[in-house]
Length: 169
Image 1 (cartoon, rainbow, N blue to C red):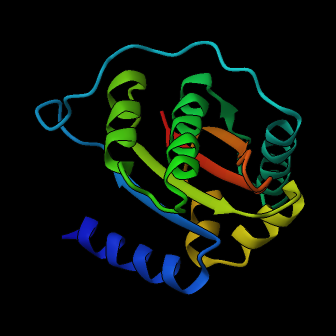
Image 2: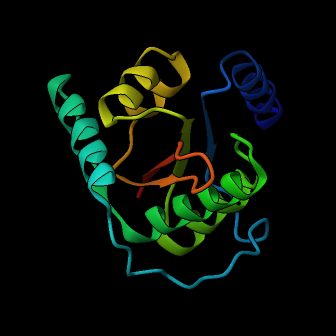
């Protein structure tokens, strides 16, 4: 039931803003998760990704929260979603449950959340937009220990797609 409420809320956000959205899932049992257990250890961060992670951590520290540690596997899962969104010309959380189940199973996460965004030119602009949205801000300020991010440019139109996943491990 809670997931249905999150999905409905997400749909409202996507249709009203169409620039960014957030979602979250608590851990699931091993019976419910049938995702691969391979850990991705290699991920090369671009300058925008490093900058956005630093801004998120700077913001968290400024309000008395812990810094989040980057995990390559989470950034890889974020990048997979950006590739999907670019290929399908959408901004959404399709297959978020599969991504979160993977992170729960592979990394032992207790809780996972996700912010996505589209068409922001700078790290400052996307963070400002996320902080202006209650759902996104809740994820950024959430009780998490780790995160990953991917920022990918659509080669057809030059617009950026953002996927930022948070995990409590």
